[in-house]
Length: 345
Image (tube, rainbow, N blue to C red; front, top):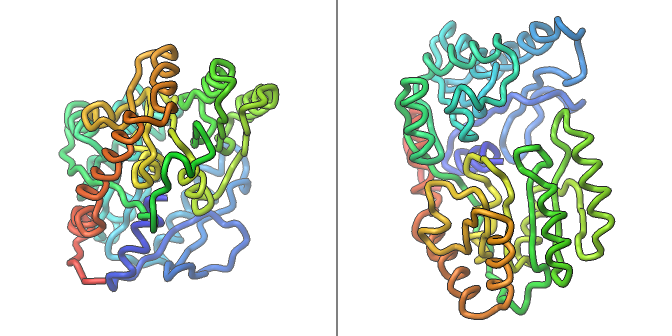
């Protein structure tokens, strides 16, 4: 999502942008919103055990060659970081890596299974020109664990035309996330059982290799009359649910800096979450960062009363976004990392 928003912002400032993407049957070189796309490979193609090299490695490499960019930008820990680094080293191009999750900065917590892929990731980190992190904590971990300096870079978000009042909203609690184990979606079902009087909407798609978790949570949600399980919803349609939500909830035990936090805050939607990046939720008074389910339920009850606590949290989120997330300010470290000057939109 961030790469899509970033690409559009770059294009508005006169820069050309290409993306290397999976092959979903679209034509090579297809253009969306000014972004030229280059097909790498079909996810299901290749022989197990061999497809790591072909079509995956070769597909990415050839698509990067067709893009012929001055700077290559990659996000998320994994083998792609190593592939991009090798390409940039071979052809003398600039490389930017952006951290997407706290685990990207912690070798023991990496979401990377194979030793080979971990080594390729480490190879890429050592050879990237610029590393961008989402928080001070990530910056510190990247230095402590990998010995790499980095720059903290914020995230882009679209601002709405207006912010609905508490009374205009008809969803008490909203949860938006992929159904991955570390997101702990089963806790939403527990919340629904503890708060039967509250309307809860749950949005999230399947996470690779976690079909059983998705099916189990979906089936358990069906047994809670106050919980609506929506499944996957496109980003541009999710925003209307944030407009309707009185409180946004996050149950993850780890994250990077979720796009969903920004989608909530920019709409004045208080947040109650177990994961609090750099302590910003508690420090700024955005809703609450409870340490247990009991504390989460108590905080939700307080906010959903719709009184001064909700109003204060809603004002805090909007004020924070206005002060800290102007597009020009957020873009500055990205433009610098990519070796670009700022062209007025």
